[in-house]
Length: 258
Image 1 (tube, one colour):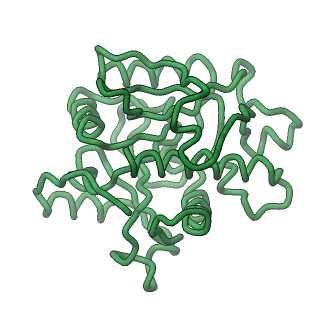
Image 2 (image 1 turned 120 degrees about the vertical axis):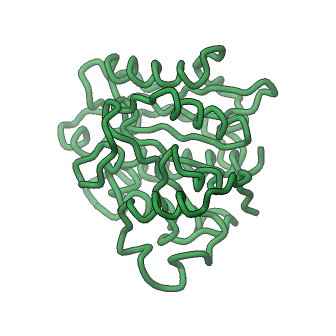
Image 3 (image 1 turned 60 degrees about the vertical axis):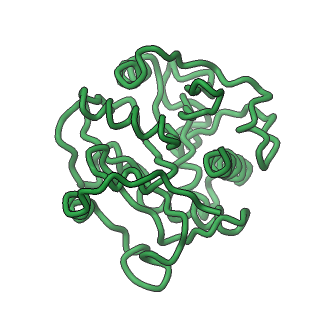
């Protein structure tokens, strides 16, 4: 059921870039680790505010890793027919040709992402060739402005729009008529749904291609990754984790069928 965007080549460079990225213990060993599953969940690696990317746990792009990726892939395997495995998550740079091996890329803390012209061109090519970007866990007007500026470099001729309730991405598998803000664990601990004082309401936004295909699914003022990460934590509300799974699975199924 999986499809991938056509690979460009330069395998030696791609391999070197991949080796520089962190690997979780979940995808380091065992039959589910490498090459067995057809679908691999790819997390976008980038440096904060245009700096070279790093691999320390404090890097924004690694937020909630590896637990969020592992738990989400467990849910995807259990609740769909997509051939995935909990250990099949990957990390990828925009400058790596391995980018084109992955039909879906997940970008977390996108308010820290500042793409240069080369990275923006690569993102544009990836999306126009059929790739799909899920954006998550950024909050408030400052982070929105940073992210929107990067996307303007990618698509200066395209607008970011609010997704209509009847968009197919909300109904391709689960009917997602519930517009509930999905908070991070710290927000839940404070008894609120927002992570930033100006982080309300939640917005589901996107960018379409010329044929009406959604290329970028933007979860603004939300934190799907925290809901996935804490799926086994009894403190985190189960209904919010279940909803976050449904959104994520719908995004993947939409990407694989459009």
